[in-house]
Amino acid sequence: MKLRVRSTGMKLSQPISHYLRKKMQKLEKYLDFDNSNAEVNLDVEGYRQTAEIIIYSKKKTIVAKETSPEIYQSIDKVTGKMEKRLRREKEKKRR
Image (cartoon, rainbow, N blue to C red; front, side, top):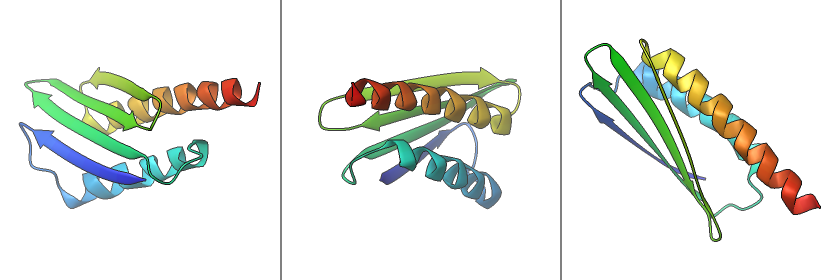
């Protein structure tokens, strides 16, 4: 999976980048194809810190977005939400 990370309103530090990549690796097991692209947008506006994941495949685009007071918490929530959606899509394919 190709991963592109963009941040707005904050500098993307090495610990945040490493944490995000580690979380995104867990999502790869739900993707059956190697040519998928993922885009992660991190945005900070005051006390609102938002993380958004967009996964592009040949047939579908899946989007998940979460906001919380801390960026790590937003990353945790959005990867959990995306994992749930990808698991659901994989189950649909099996049927």
